[in-house]
Image 1 (spheres, rainbow, N blue to C red):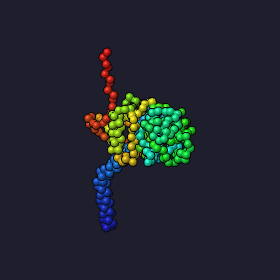
Image 2 (spheres, rainbow, N blue to C red):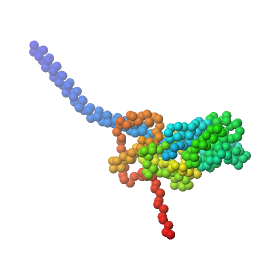
Image 3 (cartoon, helix red, strand yellow):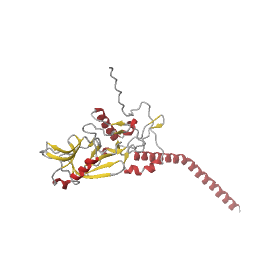
Image 4 (cartoon, rainbow, N blue to C red):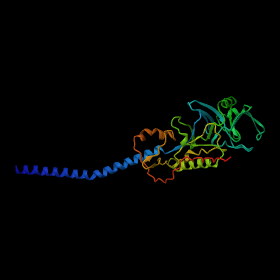
Length: 326
C-alpha cells in the first residue's frame, strides 16, 4: 500500500515538473515567436510595396479626345478616343537603305501639318497622299502605286515615314487635327500616353509640355533617368500633360525602354507624417502589379520620413512677365 502511495506521489511530482518545464519553454519562446512574426510581416509589406511600384511607366497625360499610338513592333497604328473607341490602321515604317532610308524615330510628338498631297524632293519627287506630318519630314501618307500594300501591317519598307493604305490614311486625315499627340514606340516604352481623369486631374498642379524650350527637354530627360533609378515618385511627384492643340518641341520627347526599369520605385515621400499620395490614375502599372492591387490594399504602408529640405521637386512654375512701361 505504501509502495502504491509513493508511486502516485512520484508520478504527481513528475507531472508537475513536466508542466512547469513546458510553461517555461513556452514563456521563453514567446518573445522570439513575436519577433519572427513581426519580421515576416515587415517583409510581406516590403514585397507588397515593391509590387505596387516595381515597374511603372512615366505617363504623359492627354486632356484632349484623341491621340495616335504607332507600334513599330506590330506595324500597326491605333487612333485612340477618350470614349474608348479605336481605329486600327496597318502601316509600314522606315528601314535603313543605301539611298537614305532611316528607321522611323521613336518619341512623343504632335501633328504639325496636314495636306492632301505633299512632294518628297529627296526621293524622286514622290507624291505623298493625305500627308499628316508629326516630326519634321516624318509623317503618315499613302502612295499612288499599290506595290507597297503587301508590306502594310507586316514589315518596314519606307524611307522613314509611316506608310498607310490610301483609304485608311484618308480616313485618318479626316479624323485628326493639328496638335493631336502622336507616340511612336517599339512595343516596349518606359513612357506612355493616357487620357486625363476629367474629374480629378488638376492642370494647376501639373506641368504643361510645350515647344521650343530646352528646359522642357531637360526636365523630361531627368524624369526618365529618375524612373530608371527608382526615384521617379520620390523626387518628381507631379504630372505632365499636353495642352489642347499644342505643338510639342521639335524632335519630341523620348519614350525610353521599359526593360531598363530594373529598380523598384521608392514610396511616395512623407513630410511631417503626411503622405504625398498620387491619384489612382497617376501611373500606368504593369498587369502583374495591378492584379496584386487587392492584396496590397489590405496591407499597411511603410512610410519613409524625410527632412523638410528634401530634394523632392515640384512642377516648375513660369516666371511672370514684366510689364513694359509706356
